[in-house]
Amino acid sequence: MSDNLEKKPPVTTTDAGIPATSDAHSLTVGPNGPIVLQDHYLIQKMAQFNRERVPERVVHAKGSGAFGYFEVTADVTQWTSAAFLNQVGKRTPILARFSTVAGELGSADTVRDPRGFAIKFYTEEGNYDLVGNNTPIFFVRDPSKFSDFIHSQKRMPDSDMRSNNAQWDFWSLSPEAMHQVAFLMTDRGIPRTYRHMNGYGSHTFMWINKGGEKFWVKYHFKTEQGIENFTDSDAKAMVAEDPDFHRRDLRESIEKKDFPVWRLEMQIMPFEDAANYRFNPFDLTKVWPHSDYPLIEVGRMVLDRNPENFFAQMEQASFEPANMVPGIGPSPDKMLLGRLFSYPDTHRHRIGANYLQLPVNQPRNEVHSYNKDGAMRYRNNGNQPVYAPNSYGGPQANPNIIEPSWESNGELVRSAYTLHAEDDDFGQAGTLYRKVLSQTDRDHMVDNIVAHMSKGVEPFIQERAIKLWLQVDKDLGSRIAQGLGATVVMPAGETQEAQRS
Image: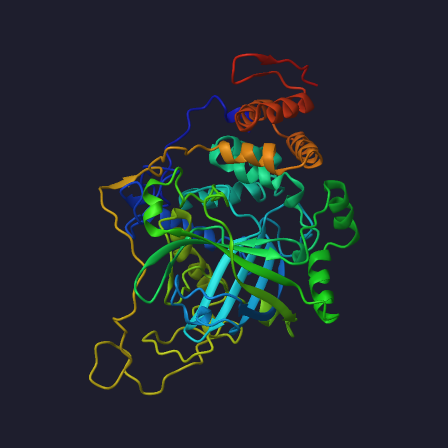
């Protein structure tokens, strides 16, 4: 790759050869508005990305899960009209799936990687899918960069091997990734089991109550088994001993009736707070401090039934953030808005056009849709009209449902979010290092970063990454530089000297 450093890069184009105007920003209505359907390049990138692998998932291929229920434990009707949350004690059947992000279907599940944390609620108003991770943040904040990020984590075209150099090249050119990379390089980057990790909706969502009042919310599923993690060396030993350790642990714990449980706790922000909050509350690379918006317990998730057939109920399971029931909606989070298209599109490709008719994906309530035909379709509504409007008793939409919305105006632009007063890419990562982690956690984090950056990462990329770590925290960056034997310029002007080995 070094041979290409001096060459002038070509202009990015669409697959039709048309010059692209941005590699990093989707087309939105103003800097903070919704993504528009006419952003052909974004849709082309996501649609093409969804079709890169057949038949396994492009991302989150290796995973496992189980069935269970969600029980409401507190009254939340002041914030949302969602029917499955309307009564304390109410139980809704669910399916949960946990996964690694970058590994293939046969890869080990105890590797350093974020974990997917997806839940399907089979509610009386249709399926509600909450698709998040075991981290409250992510690497990028615009969907235009998502496929590029995943490509940097996957196999390279020449060697068909994964490349630490490519990972750090992308990360060091994307400062917004530093918060998530910092989290990933702590011991929480390798949960001991699926049962011993938290789950997060990660994005900001909207809740709407019966009166039409709107709130911004974040989901936190807190494990009642307690947080437990592997050290890097223990995880590598487990990769050799049992590459299916997480899958085996979840299944065996349920077989023994040691049912895993998570508490759902919500952060709830008044709708009006978002406009002038100190940083952008819709930025997926940020968390909301609990001191500003404390956690409120609302329910618990219990997994008590293993799949009877793994392929039918796990591999064919589909989760899509676009499935939101009345009382719940999206936010201006650009990553979330991109996923509303990307997830159902990849399911249509991977499983088939009628994937929602498979038993594991079927809603529990009746479906009345004007969609028809397609490969493998077996549900039908008889001689019902297949068009609307019609004169023959076909289904009609309900205009009384309060749809999620927010005000937005402005020219169509490719732009980063409008910066709020305290927006930056390094502050929260620095707080994680200085105030959240113990000294042992900090030591492990430094060791993990140094070890990862020592494996095939070119010196100029190491140096660029170190400069970002110095902006996260001076001590952290200095320790990483020392571990790599690098000479770097400190932010304040002083020099950290070390002989590169």
